Length: 31
Image (cartoon, rainbow, N blue to C red; front, side, top):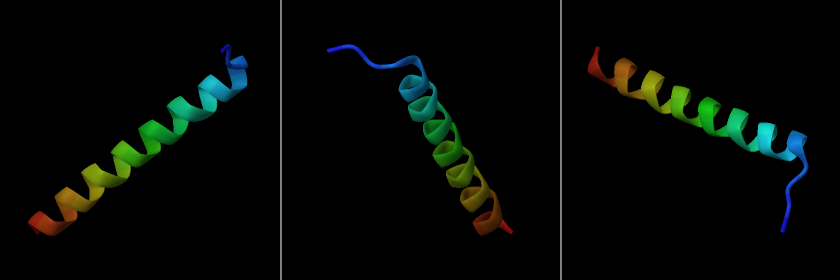
């Protein structure tokens, strides 16, 4: 099973976006 490079990049970008959103939610809920 081999992924195309752009699929790997897409997965990584979505992971980073999801993590950033969680950080924002945590910070916002603290205020």
